Image (cartoon, rainbow, N blue to C red; front, top):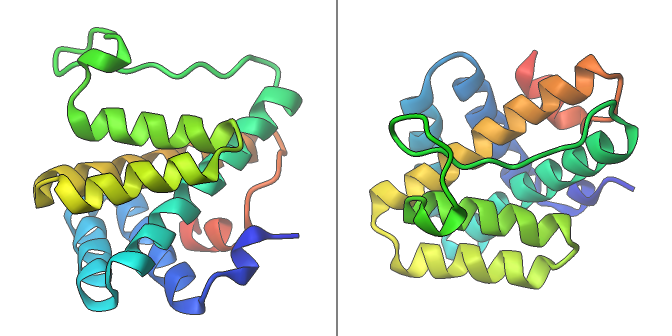
Length: 161
């Protein structure tokens, strides 16, 4: 069963539009769409939108890990392109990585906690970075899964085509 079939259409639509914008190279437009959604719909729906993206990323990571030809490795890089330990990454990147790892390990409550803490405490620019990271991972993972004939949620495929 598609876990996003239980999401309100407005959440799937907002995520779809943001993915389409980011995929078209309109990063600012993508983040503006998600920020406007959060402002208009409130923190609870913004949390659900972010969790839905991370849940989809988690499902694609799992598909790549069990059905792919290469193991999946998460790496974090600094501004100069050097790999760094997660604890040395910028706070928004740490939030995104920890949220995804919580989802990958089936701990949706911890993933939700990471998003809620960020929404409550992060500056708007930092929250925008978390949103952009979730969108970028969704796009990259969808492309990789598609290239290996692994499953990708239909709403993501539609948004990216």
